[in-house]
Amino acid sequence: MKSVISEKGQVTIPKPVRDKLGLRPGTEMEFEAVGGRLVGHKAVSADPFAKWRGRGELPKGRTVDGYLKEIRGADGD
Image (cartoon, rainbow, N blue to C red):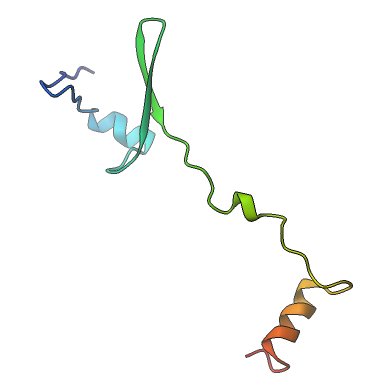
């Protein structure tokens, strides 16, 4: 498939390629020149919760279910 570079340096990615790769409006792309070729791929976004995983601790000797029951009240509300 071919595409033409506009005067602004923009290129339209053909629809079959966008569909196959799951490229939607607003998808961030990264580009680099590799061996005389233009290579583009979806930018990998950082997981906003990654830095918090594993940081929480339960009070000693409590299970998750037991702690949730305790903080929510006896009737589970």
